[in-house]
Image 1 (spheres, rainbow, N blue to C red):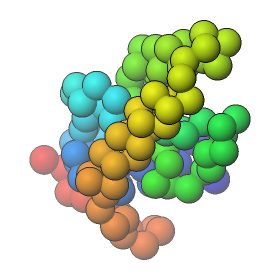
Image 2 (cartoon, rainbow, N blue to C red):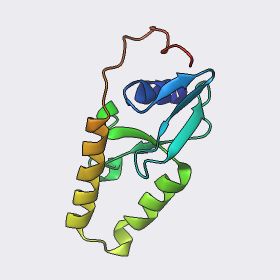
Image 3 (spheres, rainbow, N blue to C red):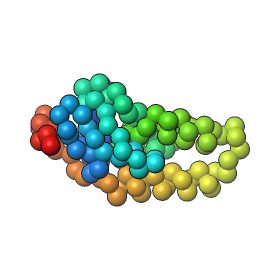
Length: 119
């Protein structure tokens, strides 16, 4: 699946996102601040593996989120294993983000269905 299609799938399954013209507008999963990205290119957001693949995470949509680039960078820097953070602290943080993603979950329409109407 292309990166743009993955962005689209994640936005469609996150209840904070709505389509506005050529943009998806919603909230960053990490900081909960406003975020908007180009629906065709994904420019304006980054794709986040909530549980990093290096720590057992997958490409399942429930483990993916759209976040600010700065939030994604900070999460990676803050929880870098070389910084000797507690595994329990990391797991608690990740569990919180996974729960937030689940709380914001909405079933996506079948592939090929047009995005929700522009507002």
